[in-house]
Length: 266
Image 1 (tube, rainbow, N blue to C red):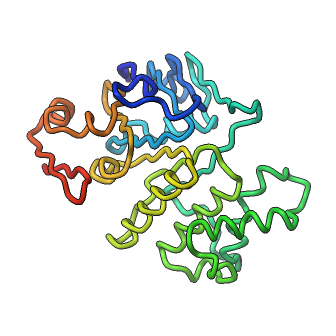
Image 2: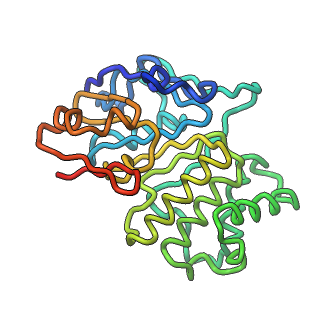
C-alpha cells in the first residue's frame, strides 16, 4: 500500500499547538512481507486533537500500533519524545474490552491498572497510585462508582472506566480506538463530550481513530484520511467540504452544519 505524504504540523492556517510528541518520517509498516502502510510522514503535537478516519481494513489498527511503539517500522523512522526528556506516556483506550469479567474487579481496581506501567512489575500500588486512580475516575465523572463491580456497569459506564484507566498513568497523549462502538446515541454523545472536555481543560493531546466520518468531523481539530493509496491530513475546516470528500470517495456528498458542527450527508 502506498500512501501520500502528509504532515499534520504543516497545516495551513492552523499553527502547531505545542512541541511534536510523535513524529513519523517516511515510515512504513507491515507484517512479514505484507506491507500495510507506506511513506507516512506526520507529527502529533502536544495539545493536538487528531482524528483518523478510514474504512475497516485500511490499516487504522496498524497505524495505532506504530504510534504506540508496539509495531516497529519496516523502513523510515518514528520518534517519540517529551520536551522534559522523559519517556512519552500514552493512555490507550482499546475498542475491545480487555477486562476479564470473571474476576470481581471494581471500577477502582480497573482504573488502578493504568498505574502499573509507572510502578513496574514488582512494586505494589501505593496510596499515591490509588489517589491517582480515584482522580481519574473523578475526571470522567464516575467517582461515585469506584466501589461498584465493573461487570455490573452499563456499556457507557464501562467505557468511562477504561478512559479512567488510560488517564491514571497521567498520559501525554490519549489514544482512543473506536471509542463509541456499540453505544446508543446518548452514550456516544456523552463520551465525545467527555473527550472534548479533556482536550480543552487538560490540554491533553487526543488521537481518535474511527470508521465513522461524521463522528470525527464533528469533534476533531484535524482529520487524517486513511485509505487505499493515501494518507492525507488537513484542518477539519478544509477536510470536511463537499468538494474534498467527493474527490476522496468518488461519490456525491453534501456538508451541512448543525449546532456549529459539520455533518456529512451521503
